[in-house]
Length: 248
Length: 248
Image (cartoon, rainbow over all chains, first blue to last red; front, side, top):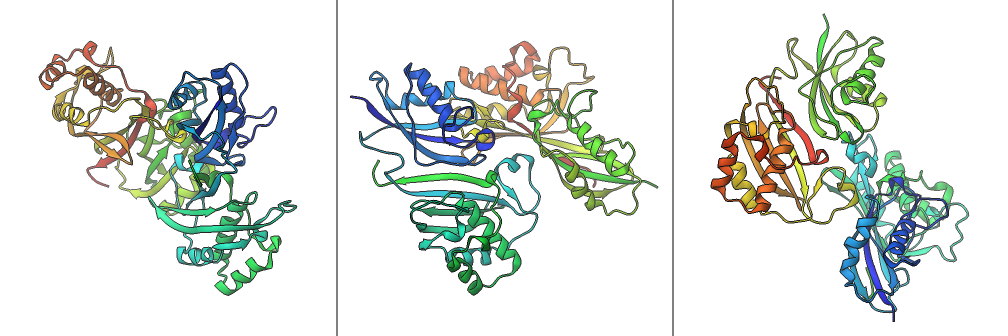
């Protein structure tokens, strides 16, 4: 009877073509499956909580796989995989999961963080943040953010041609705050449309800069009109921060 | 009459062959002089507070140069140079300095920080820290560090063949502390021998792990015997943190 192992994973997305395995591309799922293959001496499928795009980072991605290795404590997969993996992906934890645990289907919510540097930056921050070159008004951003809370039709933030059956998502948290002198946007939802977080960040900052009032911003959201969204914020500021589960 | 401009500089040392200009090598001084050359349309010499080695970073390097450009406010050199410079070196500030200000001769003290990660790390920390894979006893490290304070013959921390006329340095501060869950060693001195900070870090951690008592550690320091030093800590954990001047 194979055991189901759950991994907590961090990666620097800079040099990856995103999470999902693709032939001929360097992806996070691909690298971890390669290292699982070496440990197991047979190919192993890894199921992630969801995809991240090229250049997007993760501090708390979750994935699971079935192992036929009986002799190894779950936590021993941490050093065993890290020894093989490249330095830009790290296994932070490994634990036994229930036999029917599924990283994607069982996820209750996903939390992303987006880092913004208003002014000048240290060179080691530029891989992990959007350098804005202006000081946005955080009170205006948080007022805008309050309007996207709750059950919300996210069409205005969808990419052109989005094929989702429903574009409604439940956003349980969305706010800007300062951490270590940097502006951070944190958003939690049951699920996200493709590129939705970066579209939200780009749109909120675009209309804040334009000086739009709250009533007009609400009308833009309600329009469900993609062409009214602002530019998509660049990928390097985005981190998949945390996945919450119904059960662990 | 040329004006003397002082720069505050940060760089990620990973992809540099250190600070000092060298033919055919990518160095920080070389990159900044290249960008100064483009702004001035003639070659400009940049004087740094001191060299840093390949792979060593800086959050607060200071350098100065003479400019013949009359029409530009000093602070305008920040965007003018950053526009040209690669992303791994950033000018943080630029200011008018007295005509006889010299970045190296006028420095009163240099402060370095060394980052240590005791256990597992996020991938974006590995370029900027030494991953130790054990939890050192900070009380022992700080007791050892207290013995290198004051006027101190640093021969035990010199590289073989060090040609310094005197190996005495005045160390005004040396201590370990935790910041954001990471162990940091901070040291301030009037000046340092080549590779001295990394030798101190490596030696303190080596004897802490060996379980050496304080009296034996003092004897090793007093021996001035280089062969009793521990291994040199790797460069990526080291940051030139701050230069203090007698006058600005």
